[in-house]
Image 1 (cartoon, rainbow, N blue to C red):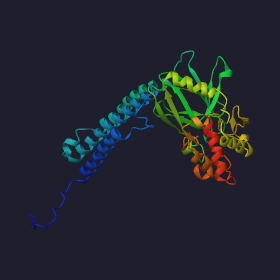
Image 2: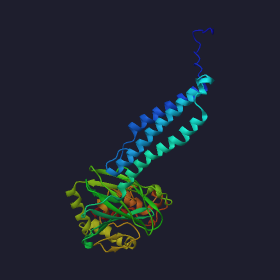
Image 3: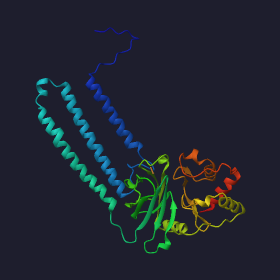
Image 4: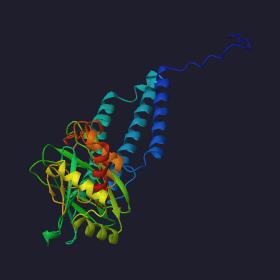
Length: 351
Ligand code: CUA
């Protein structure tokens, strides 16, 4: 018997190494479950689906999670049995039975169930669409998204934007996706699974937003230096709002209305921005960079990387390589801050 003085620390009870191992992993599992149930909401969470295709992916994820949990607990049970049962009882589970059950039967059953879930989730990619469904051509570039809304009946109504996808709520929309350089992957976790954009090939993805909101998307295939900063936003709005937005995007750029904005347009034209960017109706027809005809209406610049503010645009013009390393736009550090702010004011006026 150990004699404890009053100021002695009570020693921790000894537990067997196997039990300690099990306890630690069980605690980790509980912590992970709590984290998953509370910490996985947000504009880019696949576990908070807002569309049918994303819901299938979430089902698949939860099915795998709970199946994995069940198998983990089963293995843990066997481990405890093996650790604490008397040897003669342990031998009741014959090794051959274990190998057949755990190594053959269990994988066949588990993988067959997963296959059913997987086929269900995959069928959404090629879903049929109503005839008047909206088609959007998405072309990935290092490191931004060119987005063209296509009117199959009247191509004169096509229009181009960049890095922002507007969607009418509760309407399936097809994305016809390709790439101009390397393989990218478009992933809107709350709306659908991911699909690659491959040069000289068109992949089709059907997405549908079931509630209004702003959803973050991300390139999900490593595509070079600025891959992590190749994001975009999908904005889901009611049908009337979508129509109004599309009508505005279709129209040419607003001509400068104030003297300051005029000065900004002059600086934009004189600095060579027009070589790479298009401003429809504003005399700029470059195609190297994103279409800027309605840049002022977008939430972000640099493919979802910075808020679309006048200060950020002015900084971007001079120091974009610090802001998004590797991006292909030249820097214009020789333009003074006032000139850059006036160009930013012009771009902001392009609503
Ligand atoms: Cu584009 Cu990663």
